[in-house]
Image (cartoon, rainbow, N blue to C red; front, side, top):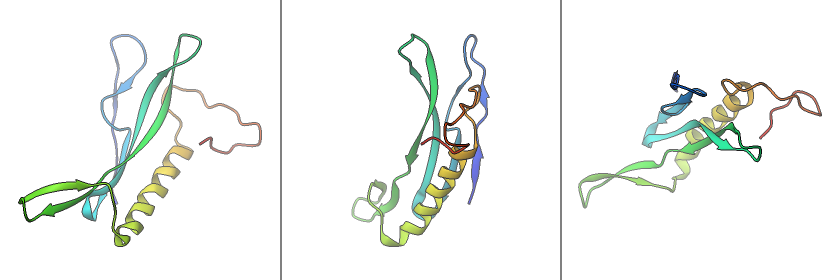
Length: 115
């Protein structure tokens, strides 16, 4: 149930760019976890803007035949509660946490998060 935030390191010029994920949720049993990243993308006007992306960590298992740890992109039914919990926490985080250095944009229909 750990959530860690990474600090951003100021670039020599321009906006602050994180070195790793903005936050991590997990890992839970089996290595299940979620990471939230800030990415900078170009805009039509020649500038750029920051957006978030979310990655789901693969399930880890030990391959006895080859005696090594491996990743799997599939999950067991018993993994679903941890996966759902991690994704819900990620949704909560991106819904209430403004992107650093970016002004909050007003919504037409109230103050709800944009997905």
